[in-house]
Image (spheres, rainbow, N blue to C red):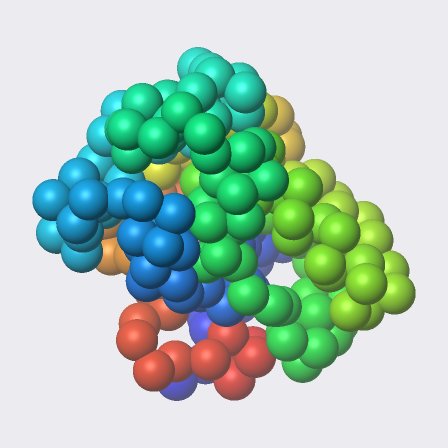
Length: 207
């Protein structure tokens, strides 16, 4: 299957699992190692506590998040570094072929990024991306939109409307690529064309 790019002038990429490899279990395991009771943070309710959502939409600062994690894990002795490393353990890499594909597409289309994320994860990503690829990450795109900066997140339709307004794109000429069906459905409600990157699919093979 190939993406339908007829009448498309803009492409908005999700980050996690579309460009960036993730391992959510790695962070769960890391939190367990530094003292999480499995009833507090397990596979069923992982990241259900409001502090994770509030960090993702910029309602709290990274410092306030770390304080919340200490309370959640009932361990006041945890250092900022321990918390950041556990929380960021899920962040893996962006393979070179995906970077090249974005660069290739950017020659013909305006390319954007829209991600549900947070400052702690982005700080790690930017540093590791530059170390791996020897270039900065944001300039790959015409603009990047992070949930903690626009104070809204997928799958809220309002979040897509913010990105559309900020970027100035015409939704009918814009393809949105995401790995979660609920995000795809919401994007369609906002008027965007969509491509659902389902499990087993590889972004570079669709363009």
